[in-house]
Image (cartoon, rainbow, N blue to C red; front, side, top):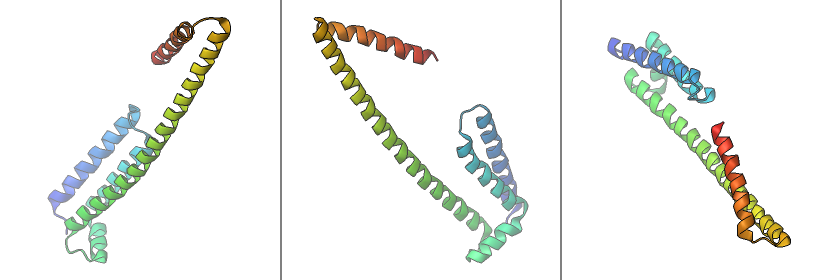
Length: 147
């Protein structure tokens, strides 16, 4: 059976977590998909704290003597699963970043080659043509930063 202190602590932590996630969503500081995990976890903990029989039953079914031990085991398991999925997501993002950097490098190389060819055909040095192109690119970057 859960103690009253543990039940109150679970309710406070769960409600605080839900409040913070809702606030972060409104401030657009966290994506809704990411916040859903924390909100659902907080709701499950609220259910466990308001209806301790659910946690007692789950602990008994799993052969865990103490409900508090079940709650800790449950939290550890859920967080390990979350870390696993975050690792997969980070790996996908790193692969995407690598692909984008490679694509940018190829485009930059092609742009430099084109400038070289244009400069050769117009009689300018590649440095003169490159300076004009870099100035134009710098203006493009500044415009994007202003957005």
